[in-house]
Image: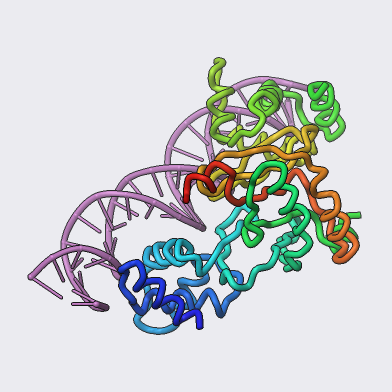
Length: 140
Length: 140
DNA sequence: CTAGATGCAAACGATTTGCATTGGC
DNA sequence: GCCAATGCAAATCGTTTGCATCTAG
């Protein structure tokens, strides 16, 4: 289904349908939350492997097409995910663990940003950070 | 006042009170939302200038002391701000402009993350991203 | 005087760019 | 065959590390 969508989107823009594009999209789908480097290694398990540069360029393209999105969990590399799995990322800045929360917790925030600032929040791109339950317990 | 606090915090930990530390803290205070590089240049307008390495090390220290905090507006460098100006950062991923919103819009989200996941959200570290009003108008 | 702070240069990880080659259409 | 897509190497950006020197206490 994403596949059909990819081909359609590429054709619609006069871009070429290549195996690199399909393979990167599959990896994002499979790995769920993944950095460019993880995708590079995952794709590279097949042969021939893709160049890391191509992974970066393809991720940018897939994002422009609206098929994937990314968020920043912290200082490091961004993580990519399919646009269709829309959820909120929550990361602990002590132990780096990530939990996914339902994006509905932001419904009111989205509405008030829209109302007060005309700003349209992209929920899939939001990461909340703070301290998780076990780190709060441990740091005492 | 932040100054008194800095000296006190350093003394309390047996660390040294140096001009580099005071100058970096002043720059963060003055510049409001600033990257390590911007701080480096701002501090460097005086002489003698500080080394960029010292800026990084000092920012880490000031953050550990709880005097400053940082958030990630996007792909690039983090931005630092005084802990006392607690507000929510909102950035447009098209034009990169940043607006500050009152952190109270997150009150309910913070409460529900606490209740449902025992997770304590750090509001000063949160950045919402999306599309600002003028970019929405422009992209049509 | 001595440990902690700073400067300097080099290393590092993530990403981008320029340019030559390849491959969809 | 042509232009988009890819590979490759080098450049770039932000940040960290190792080590020598300096300075607050």
